[in-house]
Image (cartoon, rainbow, N blue to C red; front, side, top):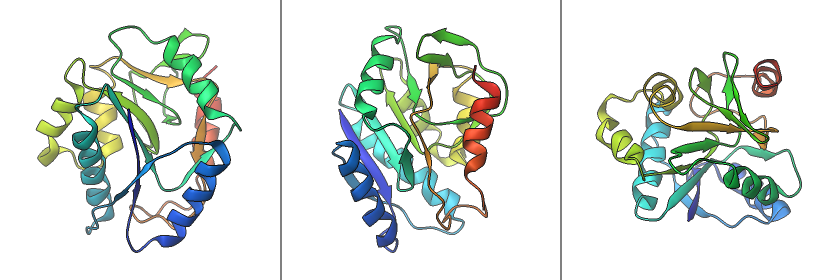
Length: 194
């Protein structure tokens, strides 16, 4: 499985942070030079799609944005446990989405992700059921990636959110939106996942 971190060339501060964070938790990744566009959310979506395309021939691909903050010291343990609970026909697992509606528990460490949830800062996706092909095929119509996922992917594919929350985002100046407070990720998670 390939693991990518999306990082703009001009944001060496975020790459320096991610290298330290990934070293702290023992995860090895490939840095993917993010596509730099105006508006920033467009380049973000295209960068996610590029990583999916790059990893689609593997069993699955993990994508992190360059502001991920791991909330556990050994994330691989929780990741392995959650992956062991996935059904055979799973399509995606989010390691840190921000749900906008209540979710239904699937197993000890998984909730079904079948409705609105923002944030695509950490996830693993596979193409066994054609999800990556579907996303790539719609790349000209995606817009903001988390909105597309909430409206077109989560309700129609076998997607999950890990429990407990594996990662959030650290407060950086966003390159994609005017967000000023990433604490809403944890607040929404705690509100809708229980």
